[in-house]
Length: 136
Image (spheres, rainbow, N blue to C red):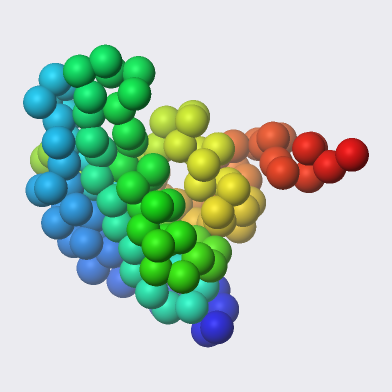
């Protein structure tokens, strides 16, 4: 594994381009709000995902769900850097549910690109509920 890279070593525009490409494959006929995400993995891979809606709304999948599925399908690992874009390619922040999902697969040190700059997931989700809370 190559290990996490510093914020300055990351080509955030290239990562956003992967997210925009993923967003182009979103299935969002109900909300009309396609979302794409991309992340770097601790072994150097890039994974991506898009949202997939369902007529029952509550069963729709956020783009982060697809990203984590792709992470697991391609060998697992830990997410190190993450970005999310809307249908116009503008940077978004993940919803609360997805922050929890990203915490599980990236942890507090996962760096997220936000409209206000790069922040750690610990800053986005302080006092997170973690798998350690389930230890008996």
